[in-house]
Length: 198
Image (cartoon, rainbow, N blue to C red; front, side, top):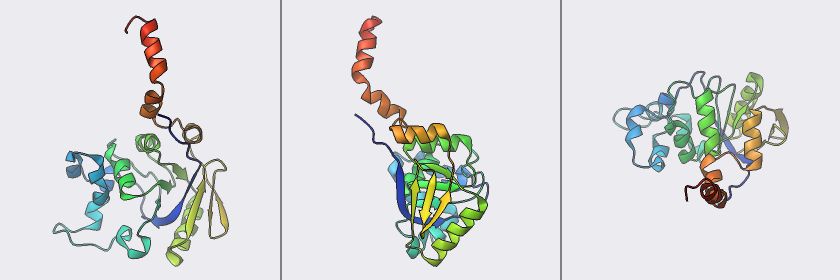
C-alpha cells in the first residue's frame, strides 16, 4: 500500500476570522463520542454555526457562495487548546483540504500533517488580501504549490512557508505513518524472522 505525494492543493477558499481558534471551537467536546470520524464533518464549528435549537447562525462556512470550499483561511495560533485529533478530522470530513493561517498550534499541525492536510503560513497582509479576493469573487481558486511555497490566486502570487519536515513528507508521500507501516509489510516480516519473532 503506497501513499501518494501531495504537491498541490487547489480550490475555492473560505475565511474564518479570528486568532486563537481552539480545537473546542473547531469541534465541541460533546461530538467526540462519535463512532467514526466521518460523522464529524457536519459538526465543524457547530456552536458558531448553529443555535441550541439547531437553527443556522449564517456562519460563513454555510454561505451558499462558499459551498464546496477546499481551503480554510484563518489567523494566528489556529488549532490551539486541547490536542484532540478530532479537530483536523472534522476539517477534513467537512471537505477542506488545506489550512492557511498566521501560525498553528504544534499538536494540531502534526495531526493535520498525518491526515494529509497541509498547514501553510502566510503573512497578515497576504491573508487579508486573499480574504478580500474571496469576498469579492467566491469562485476564485487558490492554488497552493507546496514545492514552490507559494499560492496563486487571481493572477497574484503569494509567498508562504511551512515546516520543512512536513513539506518534505508531503512531497515524498511519507506523511502518514500508518501508510508507511502497511507499505513495509515484507520488511517487517523479514525483520521479525531475523529477530526470532516469526
